[in-house]
Image (cartoon, one colour):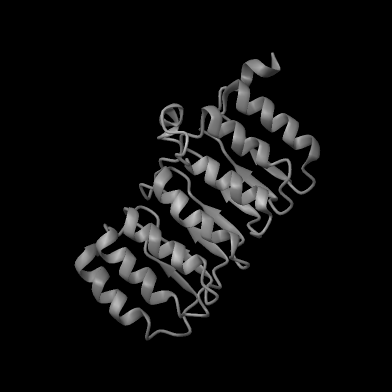
Length: 216
């Protein structure tokens, strides 16, 4: 589709008031069109399923998502953003809005760049990585997300520990996929402790996180 047709879609999608599902995956869309599309669908009260995978979500689209997810109009139950170039800054922009959201049940950010800035935390303590933003969300227990997909990211180091620890107090997650990250020994130990107090998680995928030696 590309940005040119994406902008045309943004101008017309608001005239489809009864639409429930929008799948825009793999359409070569960038901020130029995505922010306009997201701003256009805010008032579609029937929209429950949105797939933005395999496009490029940068700052403007992330801010538009924050506005949408924090809006009282948002009735999304499922948001899929696989391979969408989402890094720590962009994740932090819209995840905070989920504290106000009472509809979203499934969030998929697999195959992105969450944790890519983790090494900067030592020189920029104020930096909030994607894993830290998600941990803050899970600890708040004001978001009802039950299924969270984070495989193939870069969740690691202190961010991994912070995220894993948040699982111990969350009361809504039933499905969590953090496979193909880098939780490592510290993250694995934090998660092990968290699972002793978590009462809701039913499905957990942890493969390829450097945890095998912990069980030797």
